[in-house]
Length: 328
Image (cartoon, rainbow, N blue to C red):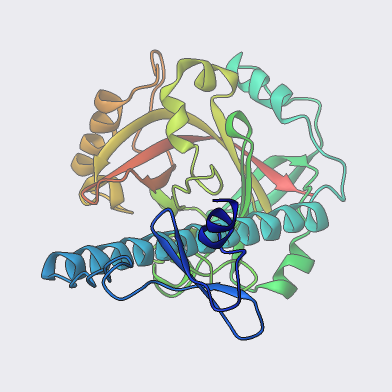
């Protein structure tokens, strides 16, 4: 019986074959055992699954989704890269070409205007401004226009809006398209540049001078202009400044509103009747408090304009010329 057990377990004489838990073993001539399924006893061969039309559709949809994901990621990276490049360029311009001269206390000058105080005590010079000979107070100009002009001869000014920490060069081209996607230094970039309406005079002497800037998602350019809808922002500073090589202009904000992309808002000169309608509309639609302010037909207006996300409207901030300084 012991011998029969050995033979069944495969430890018997050479050439023995045995089954162990439905597995078939054979013995080679060298005495090594190997496993092989006997005919009719091994596992049945699995049938290969056929690829259906639904499988093809699912694969194509997965590939399409992957493509969209990769493309979206690339687009986001491209936007980020251009945003950063634009921000870096303008930060460099401000660091390199502003602040060489003594910087005036703009907040103090705004407060003086708010309290209807004169600029007595300041040095006065007689100059020709807007075709008239006038005596103007002198103000130190912190902008190095000589060197900026060497970088880009299209420069006409530099704008500062203290309430929003906006500080950029202002250029003017032969059309209103070029600087939509071209920076001050001439690079192709979605940020573009702050630019003066090509139909305005470069000396800011029109009845209504229009300055355009992109509403950038990262808050650069005019991306924060709509924050003037917040009363706290408006109360922080109700003015903006435009520096030019010869003069420095201080503007008192009297209106901020959403407007149609066309109409009187984007007109540069008016008849007396149209100008009054232009002013009345600006006051009526304003989201900032303009109680007690007056704008007359003799005033000069600067309108800052940016997009809203709706192609048919724009957000504008309008300022009345409050004071002119001779640049020193």
